[in-house]
Image 1 (cartoon, helix red, strand yellow):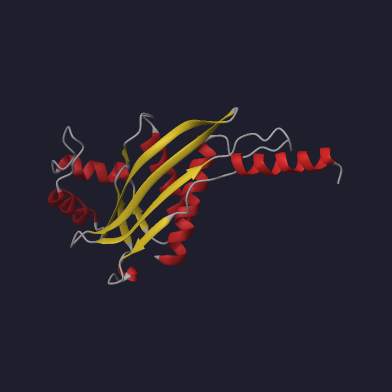
Image 2 (image 1 turned 135 degrees about the horizontal axis):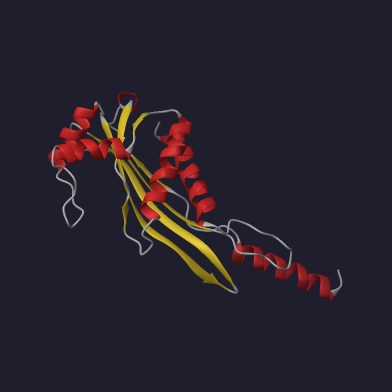
Amino acid sequence: FPQRCRIGLLAAAVALCVFGCAGSAPRLYVNPGADMSYYKKVAVLPFNNLTPDRYAGDRITRSFITELIIADRYQIIEPADFWIILERIGGTPGVQGVYDPKKLKDAATEAGANGLIRGAVTEYQMQRSGSNDVPVLAFDVELMDVATGNVVWRASMNKRGKGRVPIVGGGGVRTYGRLTEEACKEMVKLLEKEAF
């Protein structure tokens, strides 16, 4: 190869590494003593939002529920429906966003759920990478046993979108919506393989 071609190929390879989809692999804990077949109907709490983006929690919650519905593993009690029960029994979180465990258990029992899914979004922002802005997100999600409060499974996701790669004319995941969908899809696929 001529020197110029080798430099161009090296630059393209570096750009793909720098701007490619990154983030750590999802992490998953599955309780070895849990009977996964027991969990058929689950209530979902809106994910806590620990980021400056006021809509991050809602976006991740909706996308995660969509992927759970597609997986067709659980009968899902939507957050809005579960919230109505919580409000009626005085179980909504206080000013500090903390739920009373007994009220959560009472609401889930009333809804007929034997599992409770809750999560938290810890990162949801655009980050500068070279001359590009790329979306980055991170969230944790877990399934709790309603009767005991034990963790059935717990997982965490950290995902980074792609920037534009001018050298090879590439594109990639440059929007929150697409990155959110991909992250939730990847998470549920992992759960299907290891925890469902």
